[in-house]
Amino acid sequence: MLCQPAIRSLTVLAPAKLNLFLRVVRRRSDGFHDLETVMTAINLFDTLHFESSETSEISLRVVMAQSRNSHSFPAESIPTGADNLVLRAAHLLREYAGGTAGVRMTLVKRIPSAAGMGGGSSDAAAALGGLNRFWNLARTRVELLDLAGQLGSDVGFFLGGRSTAICRGRGELVEPLELPTCLHFVIARPASGLSTPEVFRHCRPGDKQRSLSEFVDSLKGQRLDRMVRLLLNDLQSPAESLNEDVKNLRQKFDLLPVLGHQMSGSGTSYFGVCASSRHARMIAARLSASGVPWVYVARSC
Ligand code: ATP
Image (cartoon, protein in one colour):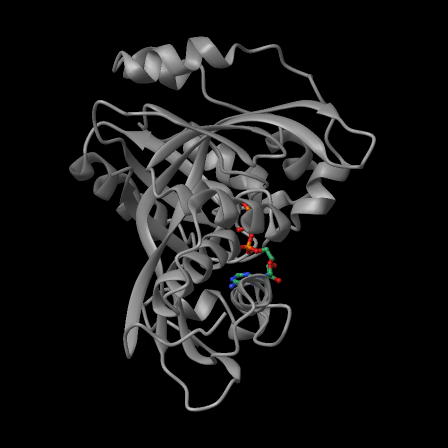
């Protein structure tokens, strides 16, 4: 297939996510774990910019966004070479579509890495969806979802473009969920990160019996009081055993007037559910004052 750029440049946003509910159902024979998780995209974004190239080269420049928090996340923790999920996605899509066009990409990173906020997966989804349009490939959603599954368990969630979903299997089976209202969060990330495979190696499936459907009902019914009592993350306990910073954050949140709190994904980011953005800003100020290196106020839509 001839792949001509449909447009000269394009910029797409890649949102971060939080896991509001994460149950590790079982360990599978292939080494992965079956999960039941509710993920929500939030208004914290990496930006992926595409520019046409005269050659067939696919190149990527990674830029750390300048913010007062950027010092906490050294650029070297994000791979800039062939390991970067953006490059892997671009090569996979081009190989699948049989094209020869190149592209010059710039990724501006704002989502903390190794934080359980899905930054790498979201960037991969932005690359698949963005290049499908930029290269005028007209690949279907089903085809892109198949490629997403080859890149990572959470890539399909971000590709769907829905703000909230129930994800099953390794995370790749995505069922969209309509939230009747925005949720408000304050998110904290310590200076250290955690490796997802390492946390999974230390988890014990099915430790806590909690019902996904009860959690989803509370979300759909806007029962915030009930929803916060049903928050769950089976990866939190192994993460705390591997990383003191996560435990310290939990202890800090225990003393704060948030509606509920827990770690996201495999950590190390930790979030509190708040009643409003004003409430979230107030908690954020207290966390920053207590020395937490990265604090962010976010909402789910
Ligand atoms: P998840 O909840 O999906 O486990 P995470 O925040 O733990 O999310 P990331 O930090 O986004 O995961 O990615 C995990 C690893 O993937 C990183 O440690 C990094 O080495 C690698 N990686 C590859 N491409 C990227 C990218 N574009 N952005 C961030 N990390 C990337």
